[in-house]
Image (cartoon, rainbow, N blue to C red; front, top):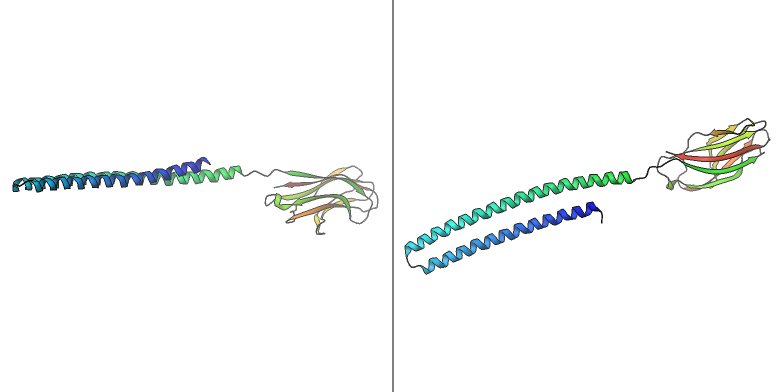
Length: 226
């Protein structure tokens, strides 16, 4: 059981014990007063002298007043203590709630950048065609607000080598992911950021060569970050 829950239960138990103590003290004092009055009444009935009867009545009144004062003082003290405990309990409950909130916040793992590698491929097609480099991604596995970038190392001798990402499951082309290179030196190119489609889908890398020459994708990867 968490420590804060145990502490909360302990204070509830203490509160119940104090209330029970108040009740017991009040009953005991009441019984004491009642017993004293009975004793004095019995003594008064057994005494024949009117003077003794008057003295006993006076003594009884004084004792009753003293016991009543003691009872009121005890009840007032216990009531004050109960009020203090209730205030402390509220303060502790507030501290527990604050600590629990902070603990929950601190326990939430921070998302770090994730890189998903697709592989390498090549194409001579002048039209967009699937390279066979694909990956399954479910947006539910990532926190809200993450973005994706397509990065690829491209080279071609004559013309331009292009790549882009497509949602193979739905056929939707992510045109913002299109990147290209027109040199025979493999060069890393990075697309602008875009959002994942909501849900779980398979994404595939498409490529094309504007000249019909071999467009080489030395490596391709997706960078997911927030």
